[in-house]
Image (tube, rainbow, N blue to C red):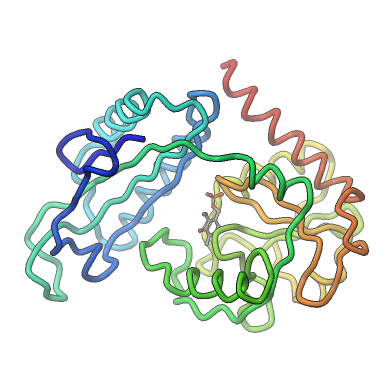
Length: 284
Ligand code: PLP
């Protein structure tokens, strides 16, 4: 893998940022994760648009023009020499003596590109996952891809410790999203997913999946559902850049379709279309 520390490209193990970086002090920054399939970025522009929206939402000025950022990203990809990989890009509000007001310092943009190990996610996509519902204790600006992931980290670990694969957040009785994914259910050939408002991250994968669903004649309803509706769904799955489309076979104590994800016909169709989409993008 390769890193960009804000000034130069170097091996990830050698890359460092100052102790007094705002990301370190306050989690004061934003990020994106972008998948590289066979040496080609998937939905790079969508991710960079979201980075710009996150930056704007937290009054952070990106340190370079977008064209320069795109050049750095391309350089990082080439230097990494990775085919199946993920680019992590972070922008922090820079380094300064610890004090809450915005510093008089330039923002710092850093990156890593490293290989992704697909064995685990491939297996999950086939076998499905068990999820645990948990209260959504996060703040009310979840559409911003901010560095503050403590609730996500805590609930992920709590789920793992309880023998589940992941936690699903529930706010006011309605399912919002996973700790690092969006979530959808299928009922009578209709897909339901939380609307893209402030309560969830507007996932790039979510957007692609909704498009694919419409293409194959599934009705799409962007309306939040309850835990009961999740447990009683015909099919359910999460969506994210790294794990892609992962069927949910169990929610708390309840099995979906008796836990037989092999019978998730529409989820499988969406998985196939999704795979075809990233190979189609390669040909372009
Ligand atoms: N929701 C949360 C909280 C996430 O952290 C992520 C990404 O990791 C997603 C949803 C999915 O977003 P995307 O499809 O853009 O990766």
